[in-house]
Length: 490
Image (cartoon, rainbow, N blue to C red; front, side):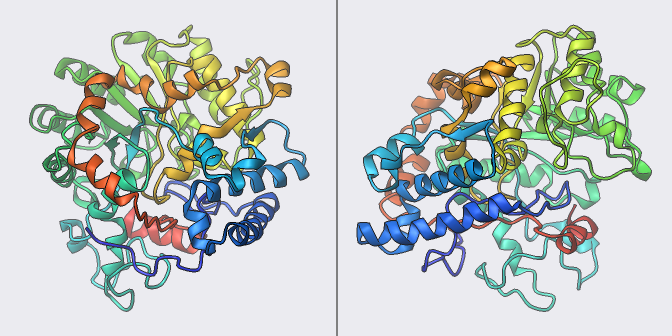
């Protein structure tokens, strides 16, 4: 398995990664002054706490105390900037006491991540772009084994299946992941269905036969995609179809209740694939923007009650401030999903699921946004219908997202003012994995039994004796990198 070069031996990377990294579907957003202050304070506290514990800063940051100390610094900065919607429920003691820290940022939940990505660094898609093109470029110099200069594309190893397996199954508490796809034509796919199946087989050969599931990508407004659904369902053992309603010929998307959308849903139903995963929110740009919103979700959910509609990103818009839902207010973002459910009388905990990939990663930066977003989704989609997803490995290992969600709590003020639920341990367990077992047809007890003794679990047990997380993120971090990503990689 490949290793990322230049591990942060001096401890200059924080375990909770608050930065401008994007998944490539939205332009990177600069972090706020509050986030900058939190990062700076976290590094200062890490230096001081490492000295108190007689450790190097790297040793301290790799420990549970390092994560806890970082979250405490974020709390301090958020409070200073008047953020009252939520907080990370961490005791001061956990910054120095290993047992306390591990009890708070650690956990034994069943974690089922329904959105993961990687790139085939040697795929046929590279032959279709100019030899000097630099797809997915912009990663830190020399942070992978291979070179990073001229036309060499060795840096793509950072995004390979081997790094994917390490980041997901060794450096995080993830038990199961669904491997998803990016919007593309079949000719430009950075990961094909064949690649995805190969990675699934690699994991299966490690006795992890239940650890990795795959989607089948379909754009029903693209020639040949509807017909291709048959082969995906019959030959590749897919768990769901994944679609992008804002994507299409000439940049024009479709609504789910348009002819292409209805044809896709009916075909999936006929093929026995009940799950339709739909990218909503995180708009690609102004063209066909309306198709990135969720007004159509409630319509088809009511029309097809036997189908499951999994709304990837929960219709979140990265530049949008989330507020309490107001019926008829016409706000963008998550409210377009909720309004559609309300208008079409789709009850909570029915057949519409809200997924948190990239959404939670962005919400971690702002506890007010996080409290409103999670509070609304748990209320209107239902506490049984919010799904854990991380969009990794664009954001590196998802462990920091896991640790942040384990400790996040909606403030009593926001609970009382807006009727949001307290995030109880039971709700966390549901969101982390139990909710996804229903649409994906997984028996948690069976998977627990298998994964507790497979090769991956044994490797992880040994790895934890000397863990080497890199705390890197891989997606574009600024506008230049984002435009390059769109040109050659997205």
